[in-house]
Length: 566
Image (cartoon, rainbow, N blue to C red; front, side, top):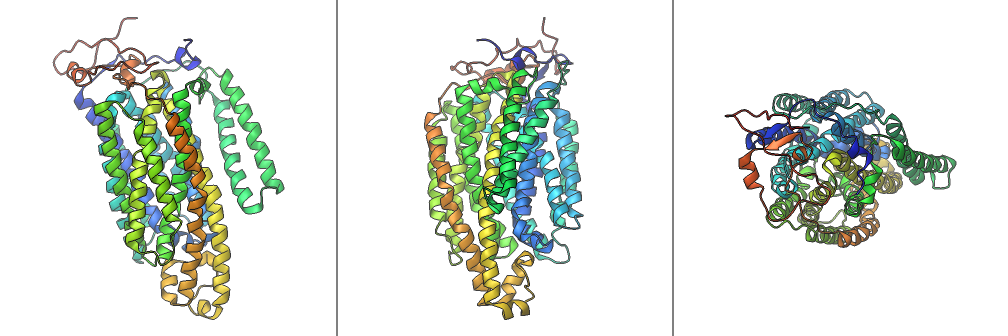
């Protein structure tokens, strides 16, 4: 098999290989946990505070852009972080991502209007995308695919902690006027600084040198492709698919995508190596992640808003109602991770996960303002069970299917297409939701004009949960029904994505999981002999994985290995 360009031009490390001991791996993992805590905590805090934030800043009719801006920005930088990490090493990039996210939190807290708030959410996405990609790639660098499943447990615990703490904090800060929603962002600052300090001292990874020219044209045309696609879907939903701005953006997407592919085929170090798409396992897992991402993010992006308005709960309670989903996800992420490590089998989990999530979507089409909170919680728990069987397994299989030299680029590309699906889903279905909502709310306010004026509700854009609850019936009931009628049908529109996902899951090939960590396969590290014993299994490494480097000669507690010959 002929190696890809990126494999041939793999940069050499600046230092001699390091020894991967259990202690070193645990220290690296602690830094990743800290970084992921920052990002996941922010998402759960913001989701519960969103209606109050957009109402206060006058942007309810454009609420979808708060989520879309973050997803778009994080999607744009994922392949860049992934490839640059392959070329230069991942430590400094990970620290930069944390710092960027923390600084953007300060900007969001100080936002004077809705436009600036959306801008700073986009900047947060530039940091959040890096933390997501680099953490996954670093785990693959230090832990073999066969052992990686059991590391999903601690990562699941981080998301579980965030799911509990985030809604409570977001609801508390939003519901207490003496603090305000701005503190949902100020609270990121000390957490981000702590993560930065932990990462600075604990993230011991090799540095690299790269002598090949960087793929600047690839970055430019990838950005143009992604941005034009998102704006195309947004304008299509708002202005109509035959409007001239929509058609112009569609043409810009097609042209930039074609140019991007041509640029990548000629680049010495392409941002997204086209050779990845000759790997059938990688293609199936990437397409599966995109289909699930489209449905998942679309379903959960507006649920807290629905729960606050349609169910009449406070910000704190609506956040707590999202906990069953995280609980279900936590259970199946841990369970599938342990089972995958023990058996080396994984295909059954995505298949089961897609079926479970699709069943939850069908159930959610019955949501209304009169649906009991227990029923909503059970729906979300079922959805979480399904998602936990899919998301981590898809990334694991994609990483296992490619050469170690392309580990970062493959991780980023897999996540990139999942986020493209998510961004498209939020843009398309968010547009459907918000346009239906604006129409419904306008009708409700006109029909109850005197009561709305007495309650101080003059426009749908300035609507906040507290004002809705204070208004009383029949206005409150009309607003509740407006939210229910706008959101519930969206779940039915998402079902075709899960039909496609099921077909892809059935096509997924089950190949042996590698016993070789990425850094070892690239000759940047050698495993401690005790660690090698724990990684010994009968199955051979996956096709395309480089052989492990020879073990280092250890001298006491020294963790620096002698350079490999040649």
